[in-house]
Length: 235
Image (cartoon, rainbow, N blue to C red; front, side):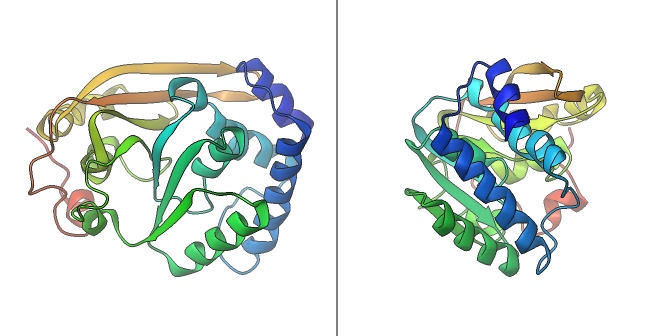
């Protein structure tokens, strides 16, 4: 995990021996789990360290060390689990709709010995209407889930007023951000900034779209399953 350790240090993050051992276990279990379920197309050690683990940790400098965090569409546990390994004090929830991926999440959390991790099975469009989860999280994360306009509808309903949505993106996202402006406003958000992450280990370039929740999301949102992706909100 030397590449991960070096990249984390460039972010101002220190990983101790115990944390690096957990990441090593995570990598081995990810590869083993990938044989049973399509978790990732990235399997080579160096690429997993950079494109999965380090990429997830780029979020760490913009979230508080404590708080309630929800990872929407968690898949193999990214970005939520790397952040939990880094900051055990986080109360983490992982939302995933695919049963085989949920099984992997349950397994990997047990293997890593992580506490205060809740795994939620279901679709964001439905779970976001449940009182136990609606507007209950300080930070909501979503990585490679959907276009920003769709993503905002799937995630902002979970964010408490005063909390934030953080969406990692790559490439030129100018048009995507512009097209999502109406959805952000309609759902009670305000774009705070687009933070560029520059690291030698991530030459593709990363952008963190940070949206603050300034007012409650109207009760009608998110719409029924599939609707946000098929018909993204537009002004």
